[in-house]
Amino acid sequence: MKDKFSENKVRYSITDPYKVAMLLCLGAEIVERNTENPNSIIFTLEHEKMDELVNMIHSGEPSDLTQYAKHLKDIRDYIKDVKCNIGRGQ
Amino acid sequence: MPYKEENISIAGGTIVFAGGLPGYTRDAITIGQEDDKVTIDDVQQIQGVIDVRRIKVGFVVKANLYENTLENWKSAFGINAEIEESPVKAEGTRLKLDVSGDYPEGELIIYGKGESNVARTYKFYKAKLIDRGEASLDAHNATVIPVTWKILIHPDYTEIGVIDQEKLPT
Image (cartoon, rainbow over the protein chains, first blue to last red):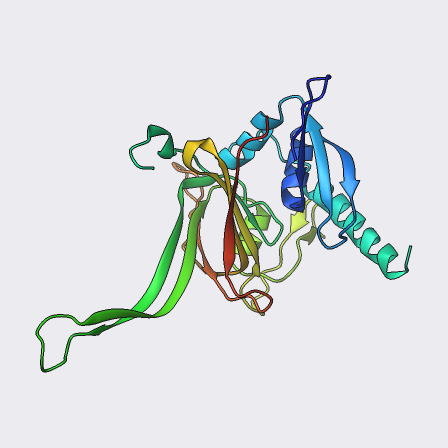
């Protein structure tokens, strides 16, 4: 799902945690998390130049991924929390 | 539709293996197929080849890891020990050359490009880093670690992987 808002920011929704972590490194921000399916959580990210960020990753030319491990850990911890809470019936 | 210039793509890719980033690669990332075949050409009644049948198929991905990190050494050489703080040097790290254990295994994803500049993702559910060349320490060239992943059958899927495509977000 991709929408353009008045702030000229482009939204991009994906379930791939690795790509989310890379996009966070490149400056995108998570604006929404859809946990209807806890096994496939949809993260919606936003950035003015989202097409350039995604293009960087798919061209093998991401500018700076030094924070990748940290972002991936945070995402995985979040996914784990969601699944634990679902298990508790919350 | 054939003969469309935009179907020719020139682009590299980003590799994620077992959740980690090997980083820069030298030369091309290659995706190939290894297969065995049996040729049926020995019937008495007809000269020539009756059929060629595939009896085994597998995919292989190769890359030359260009980043001389301990993480890449650990992954490429199948070292199961964790990278830890060095006991001999403040703010240093150590990788023990543990020679036990199996080859590293995990999901292998390559983010690349397809025709008309689409974003293409190659996802292999289970890959094993089974082979590596020699990592050279060279005063005149960068250290390169050639690695090979064998794509395996994942017990939860009927296919070994998927290729997904999408247009760049606008």
